[in-house]
Length: 434
Length: 187
Figure 1 (cartoon, rainbow over the protein chains, first blue to last red):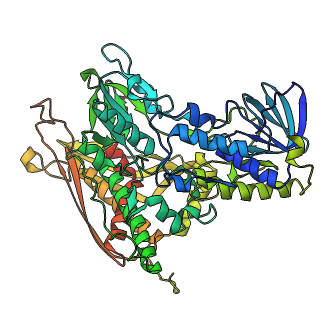
Figure 2: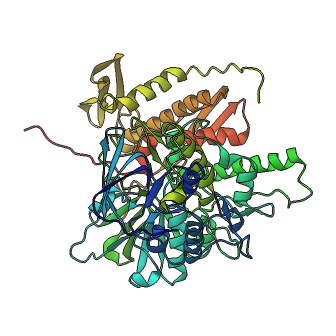
Figure 3: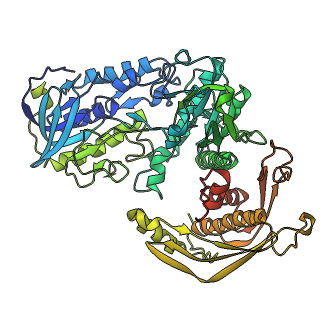
């Protein structure tokens, strides 16, 4: 890895990659392999989001043996474990050191605009012009907070602090009172669990969610999802891609004990599960009465997933090598479900929003976003912008696209498209730039 | 993989609905609908509502004919029982919406329905509406819906159809989530 200091002015290069996380680095590896001269621009350090924008206790949801990038794999002693954030940073940084491409850290892109035959990339440390541009800035730049948040009163006797999962690091940041965690994907469940264990009463507001056990029939659930080919399902194979792309992340946690984290686990630890936060009426938060159906949908979906795994085991004759088929207990719900919470009661002093993230494209001065601000692309090839590519979004090309190990196939496919776009011009080897 | 094509007909034109979905996703303004009803007081708690016009696809629309609904209260409420109570119409709305959804989702999933029967009941403590106890709400404390479905599918597949129907139901959403209601009196 070379960290160049750049003098102001503008420089030409065949390709620019924005972002030195796993996606940008994997793409750099593939461009090097194809002899495409390029630079990687990074606003902070390598693996910046993993360093600075995750809570302290987070571990990867994928087991170590699955941590793989093009030309690089896990070599530690705990293949079944799940990396902590410092370990992820070490892993991605170690990968960066194997690459020849110039990585310009502490270089923030301020604007991307079209020029004849390519793009102009303005940064706080000079300007670049390129014929191909790869956006590898990640999907989790900005927390999304629903509109209902604006209706929460902050006057009189009501003093409720709002914090997003993006800003959350550990329970010590919060008051000693109860916490309403809004959102029941992996983030919401993990934080709800941590806060409840810290001695705070947690209420978890849950809409549609994806339930799955950590392990099934003696293997990690992701082992089976990989083995059955589910994670390799392509963007042009699924019936409703828009829905697949906005599906919440599965309720998983990576712990040394490989434990399953679902509503039943949380309820047994004292968490109250309520319906989606649907409205605010004065000082009263209102929870949807649809929790039962959200839970039913998730239980049924989990059943279909496990059945598919059972069928696979049967077809391959693996039944003798793995544990017996079973089904997790259906989700137990409070009866009747709680429908409201009076903020004046003092029951909670914090609302924690774990309601998802979206990418930040505010610096992208190109007509490539739809009415809802989403980048229009087909499998990472941005629509109506020749030479522009995106990496690392949910279900970008495959179901595994948002996983660390999903980067490999995407980088290979997209780099092929990019190379073809450049007319296969071998404009010099990476090493010539290094 | 099935090597034959199963002919499933629940009487739902799924291709037309999917075409509409695709067209409206390109033209969200045409997806803005406004549903209407009018209601006239007759006598006592008896009133008569009519449904005929609505707005959608960018213009005024009309049902094939005007539908009329009488609402009243049973004799034990000292009324004349000229029609179902308004709260029963809510049950009718929910049951009809979920059942229509089941037919549509089943058609889309290539599941032939042979029989669908819904029993719906809502529990209410009328101390609320009578103003006896301010801690009792006026509306339903809870609603239970029992689906009996005979279809060419497994029990899990039928459960999934019924769950998906709830997920896409307008009336289910209206009942389970708050909706702002504005009532004005013409001056």
